Amino acid sequence: MSAIKRGFRAEQAVRLKNEAEEDPQALEDRRHRQLMNELAVLRKLIMSGAGQGGGAQAPALSQEDISAKIMEEFRAELSEAAKLKSELDTIYEAIAQTKKEIAALHETTGSEGEEMHRVTNELDAVVTGTEGATETILSAAEFIDETANTLSAHLEGRDQDMASDIQEKVVQIFEACNFQDLTGQRITKVVGTLRFIEDRITEMMDIWGGIESFNDVEAVKREERVGDEALLNGPALEEDMDVATQDDIDALFA
Image: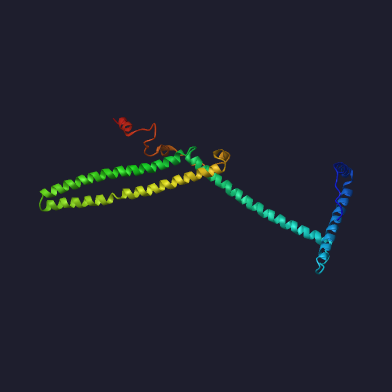
């Protein structure tokens, strides 16, 4: 095996200087000859390897065939790189769209998730309100049932039948009040789902570097309410501050 000659920095500097001063056409011709010489050496290596294999000798490849083969491999690699770039562009667009949607959710729910938190509180208030109303209805129905039972003991004939009819209607009221339990269970499931979604959104934002990484993302903002619609905020929650109470409203008409 022939020894590989090591190039020194001084020699490389002199060679680069000579190439810079050389005529461009002559430099191109010289580089072309060097390339062809390298291809010839490569061809000899291929032929010698085939001869040492002991099998049938492979047909000799011309320099044009070798160049064509190299270009074909280069084009194949370039095509794969183009496909990879296309896939990466698709992934980038999907990530950008996802960040945009998350930014829109963040814009809607507030910097600390106040609005999402309020939604869950509103649903909790629905459960509490229906529970209180149901208790009031059941208490009134029990009083009516007891009163009708007392009257039935002191009445006769048609009047007694009417008292019995009242008791039957009270039983229907008791049965209808079962809605509160089912409604509470369904709303509790919805609240749990909303809290799960809120936690997942927070974790995704943390994965991308927290809320600071979304500062340059243009979020889709919700349309602002105008006119009377802007004043309709629904009933206040117990934790709301600086809101008008029913007593304040009654005082306006006093």
